[in-house]
Length: 480
Image 1: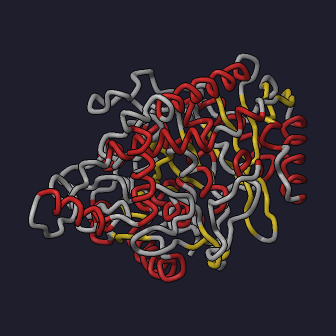
Image 2: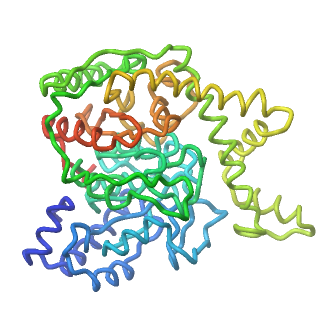
Image 3: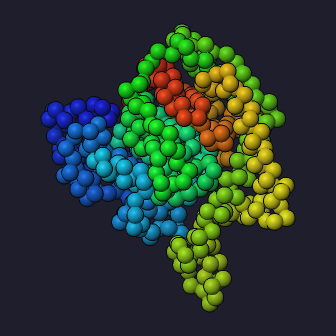
């Protein structure tokens, strides 16, 4: 089956060169094949897809285009599990805001994608339905927590999918699966109806196979929503219309605090090639540093803030207000039994840490201290943005690990800094895009571009110029 970009598919549908019914019939044959190989779907919504297709007129760029949702987006009448036993039978009575926006555009929902339980994790191994596998090598992880969405775009099943990003949950799996992943500015897109992780960090974003498609999707989703008081009322630019690969006036900072931690010689060589390519395109590219002692605080600061907020956000999942209820002789027994049975061990550990940090006697030296450190980190980052438009880093230091090797338990600077630095953009709320930059041992690798608040256009333009120069757009793998 030929895999098309959004623009290509729109042209073929609207011109009559491609019969939509035939395309979708073939698409669902591919869905079945890829589900057996990748285990990336929680729910396949075939009936909903054909229902959406009946209403398509193919006038808008996204009309009639297939897509996938991470399974923490509420979908009216369609199961939304967040890949957790606690929510395995939850069927929402309303849609997330962005789902309504896409429905109005006539986009066709193909299914709900697997994720790390409650979006807490970086491997997609904790999902209730089991691990998601990488489309380039099914012995490796897709990354997390939005691994199902990344794998389905990376395998060519759909041209775009939605994910959520709290620390790197879009950008890390995007890099592992060879696709474009965007975490936009915090507040640029409404989070209404998205099951939360950590509210001060969570961001709605997307996966595509090229930058132009990302501009289309982001423009469609962005804008004010009165049901989300954190969503911005700043006007939404015409990202696609304003897209250019002329970056001669751009100033780019290479964050050597991150890039110096690379150990893999092939990834280092690729990153050097990316830096030279940007210079050849006419951009000013210079090295900058953030203090190492600040960079080493990223993971512990993130861990305390994210898990504290998660503990608060998910206190309603007690088997009484929400969630699968387990029997008990008292209300307390019901809650204890429901939460014990409903959450995986890794979630329980995160809740224990969150409760510890939020305890009255600990708040000042844990949660409040982490918030103060976060402000220091953001202050250091903003010093760079005073002089530079884009901050460039490697997306990570390795290709996707094998399923039986993937672990988050390391303490070296390579892990503490290189593998966790993407949370910088979550701390600061700034846009951050992961872009495929090459291959190592047959597996995709990526770089990351961060911009100033609400300057998605600058990030898109830089990524577009680099993508054109590297020639890596629209790639996918169905064989592994």
